[in-house]
Image (cartoon, rainbow, N blue to C red):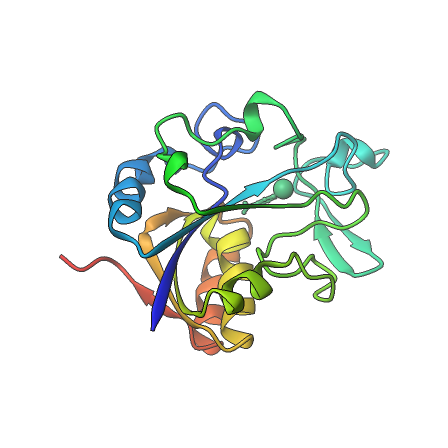
Amino acid sequence: MTTALIVIDLQKDFCPGGALAVPDGDAIVGGVNALMAEAEAVILTQDWHPAGHSSFASSHEGKSPYDLIDMPYGPQVLWPDHCIQGSLGAQFHPELQADRADLIIRKGYNPAIDSYSAFFENDHLTPTGLEGYLRTRSIDSLLMVGLALDFCVNFSAVDAAKLGFDVEVREDLCRAIDLDGSLAAARDGMQAAGVRLETGHG
Ligand code: VGL
Ligand code: ZN
């Protein structure tokens, strides 16, 4: 069994001071670096939106960040502009050992569809290519950490479990946004999908 560590969106914009800061988001960097150092395979995801992306509140007249709208693929939370391709905020946290990554997979580049999951865009149909990468490397087990636990980590973990991967999320190396109960819903959904939620091994 080959296990890959998947580090979700540990980018400046999701850390304190960033455009879509996750409370305490930067507190996990040291622990993530330590896990990366001993992992068999390391994959980083990078939220990577074109300016004017449809998930930005600023792209919808009269809407504010954290409003919910209906998109052709379902409900979508509107976010502050964040992780714009090539911007400083889209960079990985400066202390993350990003050179350790075998693969960096970018997501959210389609202007019309958001992509929380590292596997599928939010239409749940359009693949990012990560599944094929993992299968061709015979990786069948995934350890996930990163930001935000209730959005991109959650969607990635649930999709991975549905695809048949063995999935563990290290909750102590994640931080959440927690919008209107999203954290509790995410934990329930991950557990229902067969994802193991762990808080570290001592
Ligand atoms: C994320 C909201 C918008 C995340 C990305 O990484 O969880 N959340 N884009
Ligand atoms: Zn995003």
